Image (cartoon, rainbow, N blue to C red; front, side, top):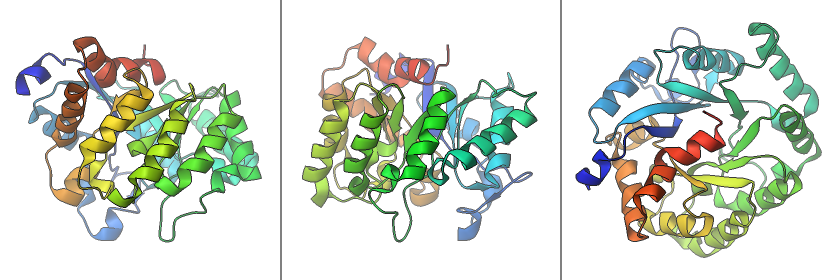
Length: 297
């Protein structure tokens, strides 16, 4: 396995989280009493250096650093720096609140960046998680759909972080916007269980038929399943090597399980090997697809 990873140079990690102690309060990590100063870019780079893969760049994804505008602008500043590993940003854009709130958020970002949306801003998400979780059909609400229309006009994509129960409505939502790019974070399996494999796989198979939908292979620490390889294999077989991407979900894996950075990468490689992936296929999953979907070239 280690030998196989040595040929995977230039990996793009499509899903990392950071904390910004100087500009934001992290509502999740700080609320649990963890030391938020530990999860900075410096720590991420150190963890990558200790791993067996070579990461060229990463996508910063919203992680409850409040206020959301400061989180977005801080991450964008990193991505605009030649010294940063961060090269793209997925912000907490208030799409579920409708067109007016979505437009106002983007206007505020423009105001901070000479009247333009900065290139590193590639898309947005608002997690469909919580206790209780949001209504399974929330993404089909009038406000949500109008918010997505604004994003589509701005050529920004949308990511779904959700439970398996949300997937049927997400299919309809993605079908409603055939010209817009959608990404399913964590295989759409936050808060699921082995018992839902049948319904989850049925929903994912339907989503895979939509050419504007891709998914990320990662966050196995949040799936609640005993055999993550089974789920990864199904996703790869359904979406093909061209529409799945590697994600570490750092720092969540470290916080929840104390695991090393490359644990997820090893599972992804196992899944690819079990499906007889060629070197070209591996390159696509570990960096080629991310370059295309996140418009990094």
